[in-house]
Amino acid sequence: MNTIDVETLRTWLEEGRPVTVLDIRPMHERAEWAVPESIHIEAYDALKTHDPGALAHLALPEGIPVVTVCAAGKTSLIAAELLQARGIQACSLDGGMKAWSLAWNVAEVPVAGASVHVFQVRRTGKGCLSYLLGAKDEAIVIDAALDPQVYLDLASTRGWQITSVLDTHIHADHLSRSRQLAERSGATLFLPAQQRVSFPFTAIRDGDTLATGTILLTALHTPGHTPESACYLLNNHLLFTGDTLFPTGIGRPDLEADELQAQVRASALYHSLHKLLALPSETLVLPGHTSTPVPFDGVPIAATLAEIDEKVGIIHEPRDQFVQMILQRIPPTPPNYERIVRLNEMGLLPESGVTDLEAGANRCAIS
Ligand SMILES: [Fe+2]
Picture (tube, rainbow, N blue to C red):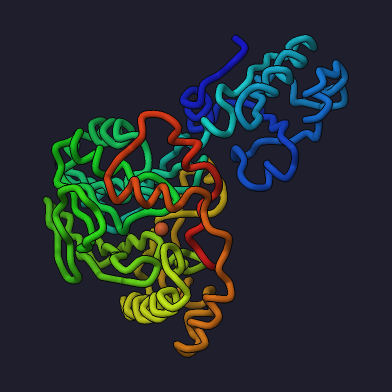
């Protein structure tokens, strides 16, 4: 076996099987994104020239299989063959980091009373966080960012039928899979009220509620990151914030906006954030993205409003100062975001080239 596919490696990591993931990319590429707990060797140029001594000084734990990783799965094959020649069980990650973009893992979010089960479904290869909420025989999915089959399988193993699918906003750094998931599952597709998308959906407005079994989801309109952005409050305890509020930062207000529009949005974001901070301080915030690879540790990425209140100092600035500061801290735009926004507005998922389009880390947050 010379190669391993993403699904197999992701399953090994989820099951905690011993494996050494060896990243052979140049350091600047690794700095952008990596496989959790992978190790690195600076040998890319030597491998490219088929230098037989490229990995000669690499010390590896004995008896543990090695998976070599590069950007697209070609140079990593050379690395795997060199290791095999040393008698080491090694294979190359098929498709490399580009394919790894679709790898995911799950963490259960503890819920008091446990009448509802909440799972954070994390696209570790890109940092998109989606949610599966289930009670009795029904389930809701928020911000689906992976193949619909992933959510369908997770729900069916628990005996749940997905009946509602929601997005927090029109995404700019990944293709939403919500429309496709709703079609596959027969669920109702809910989106925040807006005139941007050109396919049928049920509009959700500030204060609207969605009740299924023991789930009560309340929508809060929180414009700023985008004009339509919404947060969803589950049973007055968990808050799904999309890209409005993160454990260590806030949403960027500038995508698809000129300078003046960005200022107006930043000002709206200020009010939205204070609306959220007025909720009970023990409310647990579950964001839509993270900016680092998600470990296979089963620990949800979350923080209470109290923790965020303490950590994210910019929230406490006066409004004008807040607007000024946020506009000074805008990070580079996500690659291909204009094309991604157009596709999300049309509800289209291209049949090929998805991972090329979605390449790069998420950049929806300002910290
Ligand atoms: Fe976003």
